[in-house]
Length: 133
Image (cartoon, rainbow, N blue to C red; front, side, top):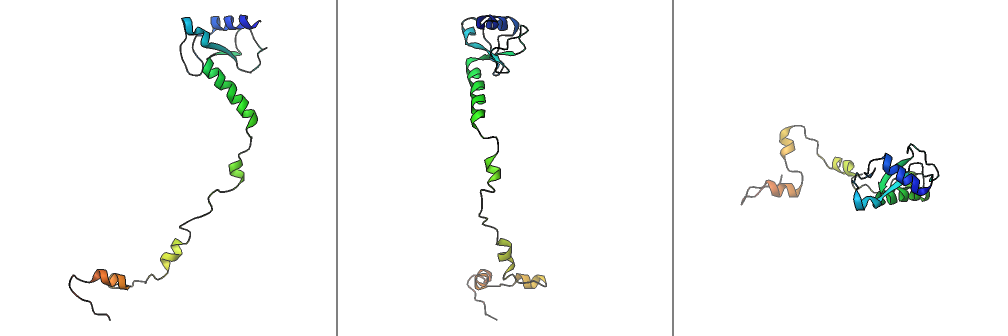
């Protein structure tokens, strides 16, 4: 079939709706509806229209841009093969730091006693003084 013939044939067979975005076409804007070959072979024009879909000019450009981009993009995922991008862990030593200088409380009274000078300041009653042991 000739180029003009398969467009007219597609317009007779298929609804005037973009196959991607769903936009309706009629009258003057029908010229914005294009025939896209699903297998990207413009010579494959079966009379039943099984290789065609109607796309608006924007979706048609997008469809062909995606296939062109795919030819240039690498097929492997370079991010996964390079290893982890993050190498610093700010909390890596945290559990070790929490275990150091932690008094072992045998009962609840020992746990409530101050363990440092800063803790003593907090437990002092206002206006009062604490005697050091």
